[in-house]
Length: 297
Image (cartoon, rainbow, N blue to C red; front, side):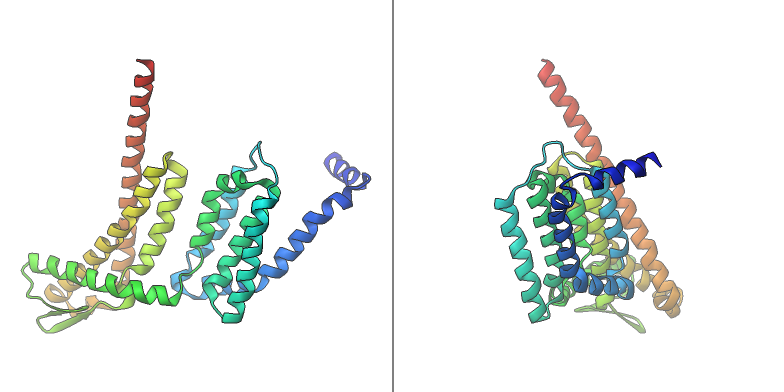
């Protein structure tokens, strides 16, 4: 009751609503601006399996921003914040006219960044780099980029999977993304390209690096490592499918068993990424000890 009474006394102080008006107007304008893009984004998170990770990333990003708090040296920076804010607003309406969903959704992140710079300065935006990065990664990639990236990943997974099958003495003939084994053709489709797992692994790499690694180089290396890990794990999945189909039963190449292989390989990829993060953290610790000894000497 005491806390509530103190809050009410603060509201009743002269000039409170005058000082609070800019913040309230900015919040209202942001809600009106972001309502449609956010509604479309949440609909994709809920209905599109390839975008479902956004249901975890967005709340996690908000929590990380709240946990990080505000910098002590924060201060408004209108000279930098207003151009960023204006760019986000123009992008919002231009992408709406062009019906381009990715830029429509990304404009909300850009507007939020502009507001942060206007109110708290660019140092605060850097302080919240991890939440803003996770929010950006929660936006589904454009279909054009997805189609362009999926085909090379399909071919790479097919090539590596066929090589693994040959190493186990399985007769293989590779034609693009089609692996021909005796009595069966395996199609490495776009869903099996590894793009979905790559998107999730990139998000996990950014999150793990931001929380447990100290140096930018270690974080960049960890995020870069997600690409070969995703491709390799998907190639192993293709190999397991072909191996089981050839030696056990063709039914193991589809349905529940095929989906179970995908989930198992995804867990293995997470474990590999965690192991890499641990190796990089040990390397950072060794580097810190070396620097300390050098300073003492």
